[in-house]
Length: 155
Length: 155
Image (cartoon, rainbow over the protein chains, first blue to last red):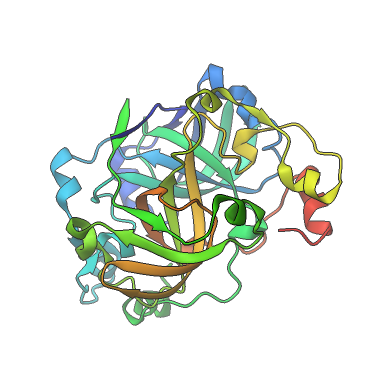
């Protein structure tokens, strides 16, 4: 068993329904706990960061989910393929860990103000990584089932 | 306390010194435990994936580290700034979680063969996320201290 402590929490005034219904995520901030705030030195200036979170509202039994039908297909009225959870961002997976790429709007007093937050208010944050050039892939390729989403203009 | 189980492990024939000394990472595979292999369905065709790992060789006391001098500066003979761990990929951080972007060379029998592995043999894998278009930032910006590394051609 591998255990972690939260370093902070997602804070947003948005309801769960607003977060679920949003394509681009919502605005808000990441509140870093006081004892970890020195870890933010030098983060200012990165336009984007990755947040690694614990998706705390996922029920324990959803850790058994291995196959899903991506919701984005259903929203577009396309026939959704059955795919494995590791090929998707489904929150239902053995370890309910979220990987969120957010835009940084400012940092002050232990708060990182961000856009594109796709997590519920109160979601625990486990780690933060800067969006560096080593995280840019020049010419990625994708499976056919996922390319059908891109063709519809859906990212 | 937030706890996870490994879904698999990094496997590489490379020594710790080879992994440390490599700029682009090493080749190897991610071995997914048998009970989680259905989660790989549909992953084939993604040229790149993110691996979220538990950096198991980081000593417990390193979780108290909040300020580091990035090693890449030292290697280039530049004066290294003191920055917070959340502005770096330092393994010494409150939760020793790794975020690895790797190229997928093939998937078979529960093994994901990859390049650019920057983790020691036996590192536990917690989760896998596909590199989708939503993880591409068009025009990211960076702090000055990090831009000095890019100017030297170092990513």
